[in-house]
Each structure stands twice: as structure tokens, then as C-alpha cells.
Length: 229
Image (cartoon, rainbow, N blue to C red):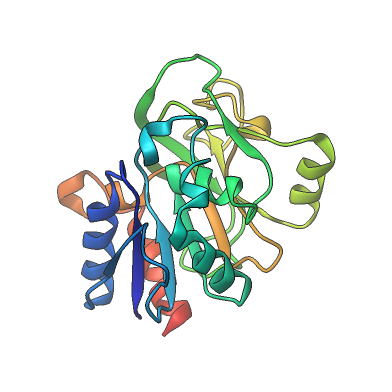
């Protein structure tokens, strides 16, 4: 599996994703600067976490217009799986590849902690190694993770099974207390109509081996390996 990680000015989780991908696949991941015009032939494109362009204007808004994004959008529409993590999720929404927006956390504070997620959709290249409604622990680290969309879009996401991850407590129950940022319907991650573009606020690359405190994020990368090889 050949993977490409897009690097924007301000990305700070690009190397983490590269390490996780290479540990699972055994193959080098290409690091692609945002100013490039083309993504090399890849089975997967990852938009990593961080603070692209310092989060000026609006999170992800400037990055969505970087030169490389024209090719990312074209390849995504042609069927290449794309994963956006945290800031990458914001970029996917700003680029129009996923619906909705990510707003300031309801607390107006940066949130950095482990959270529980319920896996709502396993029929994606990113989640096939999880069990449906399985509860996993993954870290979050963001100030703008409050997912917002109009009621019709939210209903469509739910009806089409496009909510991939939801914030819950350790028992798998979604509540205001288990929601770290105020996201509507406790949404932590969604996918496109074809389920090949996934955006998520939590960071699976930060919990993919025992030395990091757990392995719940590893199966996301193992899912990709199983789906794309």
C-alpha cells in the first residue's frame, strides 16, 4: 500500500501519521508539500492534524485552496481513499469533500485528552477491522472540533450510515458529558456517500502501539492495509 501524507505550513502530526503508516504497512509514506501540483500515485491520501496556515481566517479554509488540494480533490472524486485527521477533517469540509463545518469548541477552550468513541460504521476502508458499536479510546487535541451542519444534512448523514465515529462514555452511551467539544449529535467522524473519504477529529496515530499507551488507533491503519492490498 502506497500512502501520501500532505504537509501544510503548520502541520504538526504529519510525521506521527507517517510513522504509524510505515509501522503497519512496512512501506515508506510519501510526504507531499502543499505547494506541489500533483500527489504521486498512491493508494491512500492523508491530511494530517496541526494548524495549517496557523488557523488564520478559519480553520482549514486557507489550506483547502493550496495548490496540492486541486489534485487531492480530483483523486478523491476518482475513488482514491482520503483520510482527514483533526485539522485534516477541517480541510476536507472546507474543500467541499465532506459536508458541514468545524467550529470553536463549545467551551471556547483547547481540549487535549483521551475520549471514548463508538464505531458506528465498519463498511469503510478505515474501519473494517473494528466491530460495529465497539467502544474505543482515542486522543483528541483541538480548539475547533465542534461539528456543525444543518438539520437536513445531519438527518441525511444518520440515514445513510455516514456517521463513522461518535463521542460516548466508557459504556458506549452518547451524552453531553461524553462530548468534548459540543459537536452536534456527538459526531466525531463522518464519511462521504461512497464511504472512501473519512474525516475525524480524534487522532488514531497517537494511540497505535503500547509505548503510546494503547493500540485502539492501530486497527484504523490495519483496516486500510486489509482493504487496499
